[in-house]
Amino acid sequence: MTQRHTVSFYLNGQLHTVVPESPTQTVLQYLRNQAGLVGTKEGCAEGDCGACTVTEASLEDGQVAFRAINACIRFLPTLDGKAVWTVEGLAAQGEPLHPVQQAMLDYHGSQCGFCTPGFIMSMYTMYRKGQVRPSREEVLDNLSGNLCRCTGYRPIIDATMNMGQYPEAEQALETLKQQLQELHDQTQAPLFIETADQTYWAPTTSSQLAQLFNEHPDATLLAGGTDLGLMVTKQLKHFSKVIYLGNVADAAAIKEEDNHLVIGAAVLLNEGYEALAKQYPEATELWKRFASMPIRNSGTLVGNVANGSPIGDTAPLLIALQTRVVLRKGDSRRELALEDLYLDYRKQDREPGEYLEAIKVPLRNPAIKVATYKLSKRIDQDISAVCSAYAIQFDGETVASARIAHGGMAATSRRAYEAEKALVGQPWNEQTVAAAMAALEQDYQPLTDMRATSDYRLQTARNLLYRFYLESSGETATRISTEVV
Image 1 (cartoon, rainbow, N blue to C red):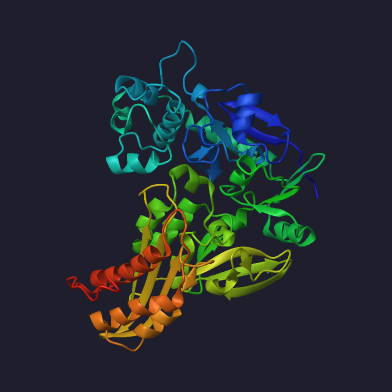
Image 2 (image 1 turned 90 degrees about the vertical axis):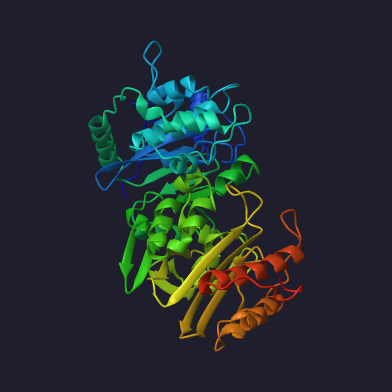
């Protein structure tokens, strides 16, 4: 098999072909230490503050897709075949400022300036995507990953909403498309990087991926890197073997098959949630609150499921929706209900060399009422204290089936089996719901930690079930009992 050993990408319009210092060298380290582009800052080094935001472009189905990403937790080899811009690439010295820069200047959106390049690049990404005159809601969503302590957000939001009032900037889209197409043609062979103590593979087909992981079950699978990046930058972990999924084209597919929505392992969070929300609009708020825009532009939906965090927000909803996972080892595949994948904290029903290839979510059944709620201290960019999800089917006024799942309530995302039993076969009324709320105590014995106490988690889980009842039935709230509400 022909392999490549260098990473090729465009940086501010110039082709860079490099051998990374290590497979886990971050984009930010390369930009500042080797490319000398110090406008991109390191703030938190964990993808939370946005000071390191850059714009990424890739060729997808013959079109150029622009995304804002966090350079601090993206590994350099994952830029192979793509294009990247930093703040230095928007306007050369002596040239007029780009409209997003001029807007930031005119609307007084910068003081100390440390966060400004990151904001500029989030704005620039919107501009390149055609969001030149965005709504306030679009601005808030796209700037959700950028923090500012000096100026406050009003002038920055104003600048973003008004960046379209300036003369249109030259986009050179056809030139970029041609560059990316040529680069795509040159980077079809698998990428292989080897240093003294690290090995990195980037296969291009699912069969190559399955074979590699079967041969190297001790390797770390890298998808979006939004979790692994932190392990490198904050915990200083060393990964001796890394297999990257992002170049496997068929792993990035979303399709409908056998009355299911099938989402591959390399589908990004934004694309995965968008497809999910088309079937289940109730997932839209969870999608927008899941993480910042740059995190959702790098992380993968299946990667979040495979990570299996007990406070992961995706799993409770998918469990409630009867999602199944497709596990692959070599040429063999098997399916499991998602809730059966999680055995205990960070323990899964997976063999060495077996990985999560896809998830299968049933298409919408109009007879099922669905809801999901995220409870956290902040609206944006916060870890849930409790995340609850419900999918309940009715036969007239009677509960025919019920699936309830929670994150943050146990060592894994788990179903509330006793609460479900209290509902099934009963009329959908306050008495039935009160019994299910009380049964949650049998399902969960949550921990107390920095986000919430055990009592708080249990109380809010009960209250969220009551909220779902009120919203789904149109009833007016009454006080069921002091113990449960």
